[in-house]
Length: 472
Image (tube, rainbow, N blue to C red; front, side, top):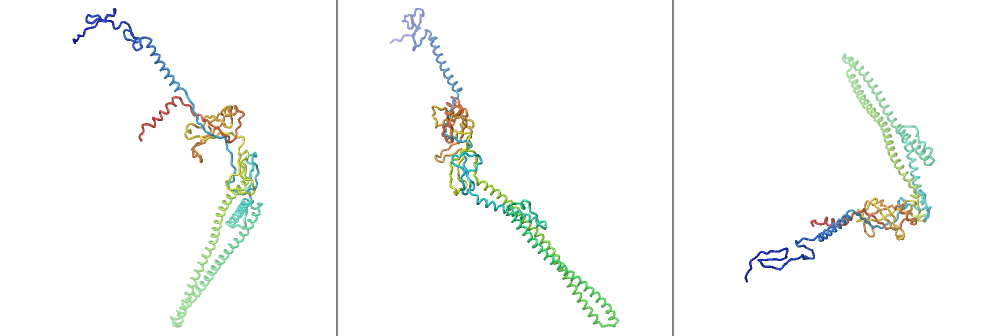
């Protein structure tokens, strides 16, 4: 097969004839042909209508996405948490009980009675309380009289000065205390005087003995002086041999005996003086011991009086609280005891007082997953399930309290937070036929803070990314 050489091809645009190597070839392109449904001119470029369609499509896409994202960023959507609740009184019902307990004497109210704050509700037996109070009052009067007597003894007074309130007290125990302390004061004075008298006589005895010994010593000294003079005269005679020496020896023996006697007398006198000084110290000791004893008794009596007065205040309070009074105005309900003579345990519930004319709130249990979305001031919509929802609008409200810590339902073991909402007065005015009662069930929608639509779309992705890329 002979291979033809490559020859140049010439195209006559005007006559649409193609030549190659001098040979005429049929025209390949003599008019525009559609390319995949597009109009392409002889030069291969897109037509103007095609460009318009493309631009319109791109514009539509951009406008759609721009509008969507503009709406997503600018539009805020609200959500709400649902909680079940009940209507409660703002201050709640008060359960009446007694701290110490006792015996029921009389029930002063009946179920459903309206009572004022401070009105007596229940009377308990007061026999024991009055007896305890009387004993403490008598003990107090006795201690006051005792302190008056001790102060008189401390100052060595001749009589006791009792306080005026003790003298004029109508209680017979005051007179008994005055008489008892006066008698005791006289007996102690006599006992003290007796001890001092005995000690004084002892001092006087030793003093007289010392004086007597002193006289004996002086007499002995006088004898020694006279015999000494006599010896001097006899000694002169003996020297001149006018007297015998034996006479001089007798005188010397007598002087020695007198000297011994004087020494014994001096020793006895010193002992008597020492005993006298000791007796005088004993006299002072009796007084000091007496004052020390009185000071100790005063301290003890004051402490005991302080304790008795504190217990007296408590006893008066107990006696006063035997008349159990209403803590607030309201309606009596849930009476537990009715029979006189029934035992009342300490802290035992006796009855309840439901307050009147106080604002009613909705108390609800909020799930732990929703607690971060609510707070003081959060708006609520309250539906009272006791009323027809088709004919009654939801009541507007506002969160007024959120518990600081969670609680746990003992039956279901589910954790929750206690919250309360105040009902708007305007909502109650718009529903005049709605009457609220404590204990009514309610369904509460707690409106959360509005969020943008883009936030709702992005949050799940952000949360997933936040939990991703973490090392196991």
